[in-house]
Image (tube, rainbow, N blue to C red; front, top):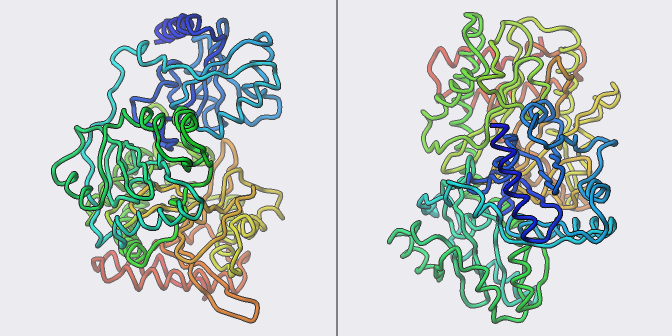
Length: 594
């Protein structure tokens, strides 16, 4: 395989010579800036052999480099060996940026190429500025892999489906009206929507084109008077065509979008910063382009009453699956046959038994002991380990249901754990409870609340590198913006109807990881003379393992919150369980107060 990679790089270098470029950048993205990339656009994987989910490859006429984060340092080092591609450990102070490295290995005035289809406009412009500071020029060229990649996977041809209004809550035509109001407000003639989850939400349609995300490959162009869905014609059934026509949406071939933007008849078109650079250039050639955040992001983020009711129902069924899994787990581990992969399969089977199950919402993270310290660990046959009746299993998982999306993490004590592990587990729990109990005024953003989850760890000299919370889509992408809870500033205020996760953690490299996560709903709390206040309502229904809690570290208020949460979990889930399951849950949710 390493020899094959070297041959592929040689082919790319021949292409570069023909294009007059001295370097070519291969990102991990697709034309829709999605988190998961269909096989057709896995060009970075094809050219490098590196199979991690994140990373950027840069090939020059003589050298090559891969920039990836700490999740993949070991994997990348192994997979890149003997390929001629050097590993650059991203986000470390000693690691040069791509532009800085190219400034050192290229001569001033040389050209750096990208495929504009798979590079977002905002990131392209930022890269251009960085390269200019190095005396280099950025140019967009044709996709080299269209000719170099033999037997390249085709574009997905899965047929999408209609999500009934009984689940969606608002009609497609009403959503189009909301978007047109935004167009008028911004004095634009139209808007191009390229994010797949935004298209799916707008049209009340879902698909199976992307791993874990129920979306379909397409673009949606909305003007003041009409709307056009760009989609491969093979994907349209008579039912879908009729539905779209009834909602005033015509269809054109997915491949026609660039040409139509080149000949756009309006004066001003609105694009999001994530729109790919090729389509930005096409639109800019015929009209004034306003780069603005897509209005669909916020419309989609604030769930309507039907979606909220659906979340509650989905969480009940997911909670039943989790209770059955946790009841099974510790006894099964004692038999010595369970591994990280086998428990992943077991949990999938239990979720698949639930009504409206559509698949997982992301690849499960089942990390035992040291593997739990790898924040986005995913077990493989090569890394899979047998679980022992001791230490921690960190289990981060979720599911897609027709009426909601779930995301939950529980850290489970499989047996004896050390005092240090108990202390860390309780520090995480204290931060988790503090954020769960937050009450905050209208206009508060997630960044202003992030410290609540970290405060107790900080006092112990501990921190974690990921965000504390992200939005969750309604039978859509499990990671949804524009709101987040994290240290770096994200200005979007938290509003009633938003879903958000709460997931602080502690990770001690080579030893263990701990994370506790619920999905929450922002709800009104009260009105005072100082205005409206909001709070969080837990959506996730699942006991939190009590075995590793140091009760002496919890305040009365923290203990009361956990007892109240557990009482709620039992009251809601117990009617859906068998008698033995009810007995197990009764014990798992029993009061910490003696």
